[in-house]
Length: 368
Ligand SMILES: *[C@@H]1O[C@H](CO)[C@@H](O)[C@H](O)[C@H]1NC(C)=O
Ligand SMILES: *[C@@H]1O[C@H](CO)[C@@H](O)[C@H](O)[C@H]1NC(C)=O
Ligand SMILES: *[C@@H]1O[C@H](CO)[C@@H](O)[C@H](O)[C@H]1NC(C)=O
Ligand SMILES: *[C@@H]1O[C@H](CO)[C@@H](O)[C@H](O)[C@H]1NC(C)=O
Ligand SMILES: *[C@@H]1O[C@H](CO)[C@@H](O)[C@H](O)[C@H]1NC(C)=O
Ligand SMILES: *[C@@H]1O[C@H](CO)[C@@H](O)[C@H](O)[C@H]1NC(C)=O
Ligand SMILES: *[C@@H]1O[C@H](CO)[C@@H](O)[C@H](O)[C@H]1NC(C)=O
Image (cartoon, rainbow, N blue to C red; front, side):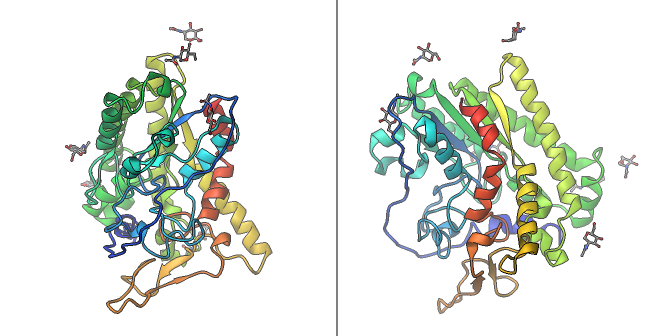
């Protein structure tokens, strides 16, 4: 079932809910570092970094049990708690005075002074190219950013110490592969001269345009995520009862990452600079997986890290699904804080914390 992963990546973002909960949409990690200059963070991409841009009425990320670990209720994040953006902002805060940037969709409800920490334009389920979720693709996200600069919400001095985080976690592949067959996937991912790598090139071309625009708008450092090992995401590992990652998809990830690194080098060479850097999610995921596998074998309390914490009870259900009478059709593991994955495609807060520990040093390079 290699491409059910891709379906699901969208699927859980398109859960229609009637939640009318009224509560604060964003939270912050306070830091008072008066003497240091503050870095402004701008975030683009998908669910790995989205901190609440889906509308509450349509986003699965606004539905229980999302957010149960932190902040204790759904916050628009595709996890039980914090996501990559939060860990990046917290690490930056410890010595550069920043906070989790405001989600674009909530910009009008926050104090203007909070906007100086930056803004998050990422929407779960989106890609560099269009995907079926009908949310702003990356081009449109950059358009939003450009508009705010035109409106002088951000000015030259705000951009002077700015960092962009750009996440591309695989929704483009989801959209593409949903239109193609399983056997092709097997063949083409293992053979770099066939069509699928051609699709990777299409992604890279558009991504390069977006990245140059972000640079052109005045952002000083731009970190782009290398794609995670797509074959290790639980819905993929499910076909081996969570014992193995899908090698075929991991080859696809590696190919994507090679091309991305080339593209970033080309961009840096154009301006003889190191504006563009990578955040290596591939190796960070693998290392988190190894770490938690070791812990699992050493302790009876730990679970197999390829198994998601929150799962639908039956085929067709997913984390967060309820039936017509409102009865939960999903189960949650005993302790989400021991898991790597929260649902079938997204890391848990513990997962992100573990993954982030491998990214810390590249982040320091980025913001210093
Ligand atoms: C950085 O942010 C803190 C608040 O978090 C603020 O008190 C301080 O003045 C800011 N520093 C600069 C240089 O803007
Ligand atoms: C992104 O979305 C906009 C608005 O829907 C659309 O016009 C544009 O073609 C899309 N860009 C890409 C690269 O898919
Ligand atoms: C931007 O930073 C440079 C040094 O890093 C400084 O010389 C310049 O004045 C700053 N510009 C603005 C508009 O703050
Ligand atoms: C890859 O595809 C090319 C072009 O169709 C073909 O010539 C080559 O034999 C294939 N290689 C493998 C390892 O399948
Ligand atoms: C895989 O390659 C074959 C042969 O070139 C092509 O017909 C097919 O469309 C490709 N499939 C995908 C998913 O790229
Ligand atoms: C998992 O991978 C191992 C080693 O590559 C292999 O021996 C085993 O057959 C695989 N198991 C499944 C269920 O695919
Ligand atoms: C590129 O930058 C390096 C270090 O800043 C400098 O030594 C070199 O001359 C520059 N090359 C060009 C072509 O500008």
